[in-house]
Image 1 (cartoon, rainbow, N blue to C red):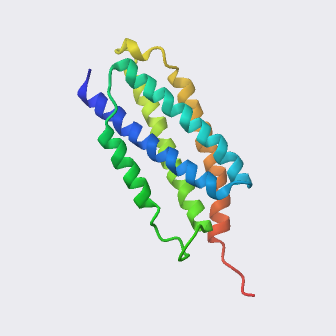
Image 2 (cartoon, helix red, strand yellow):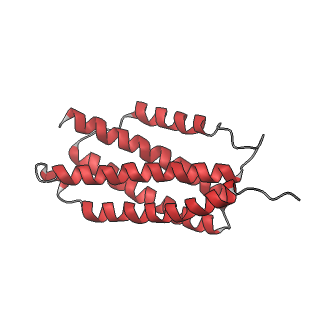
Length: 163
């Protein structure tokens, strides 16, 4: 197994761990809204894509790095400490930053699928994966995130009118 490929896959798996936790938190805070509906769908997609990556890694004989997983979980939790314009709790700015973080993660996931498709011709164990479909799924996720991100930006950043 190519050592660099194993590192690359583990980096992306760590990113999936962060994305899963971020999507869960965003869903929890936005349940019962149009944001929540999309985030529930997105979380399901992220979990499916993560399972695909884990299956791909297992097929290639790439063990999961427990250290990278632990670091990813730690970094995700530290990321919750960001300032959001309120002393405590969730704010419209929290939603915007979370959607942007999710979009960055999905962009990385799309890049993963494209990179793996490029080497599938030389790695027979990758041929069972439909990288065109995985890329298309990521693009669909990004399109939905962009629609919600624009709405979240409007809600979080619009100039408040004086009362």
